[in-house]
Length: 243
Image (cartoon, rainbow, N blue to C red; front, side, top):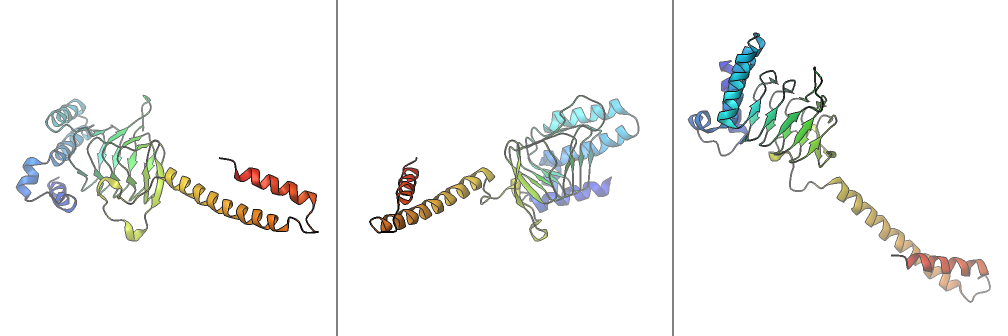
């Protein structure tokens, strides 16, 4: 227990440049407080002291604004930054070295008993306001962009954004580093990428039609120019005039 607490303190310095001293982390970081309370509550839950575990969890929620069900499983060096509004459900599992920001929900989409909350692999970063809903896996090293809504499995190393969340980038092993809030400023939405691709292809097609029109006009008046060519020319001209 104490070894895990020491690791939880050290990981704050690795992921929050605002942290200055150990005493500051111990006294002023609600994410650290919530994780520490949860380790105690989870131990009580495992011993069959369900009500007492829920009571400890409830007190932690009142003090930190972070709600972690005592039945949830947290790995080592889990860091909750800022933390207000974080909700982690009963059957959620969070792997080692994960980072969650404020407003994150690891929730379920069913009232049925059994596994109904997500499982996060190692080193997952979940941006502020993101919702991960359902009993599926989020692979090791995945990044969940801020305010995303994830309703299906995320492959290892992928970055997802949007509602519903879509994969926008695959991280290689060399890039499996910490990204604050799970996205970078240069990351583009996949819908924008599709629109840009369509625009580029449209410009290319327009260029080809212009060249075809030029050649057909050059044939006009020559002996080999036939009635079919004239009709084709009119067809191409009409196509170019479309909005």
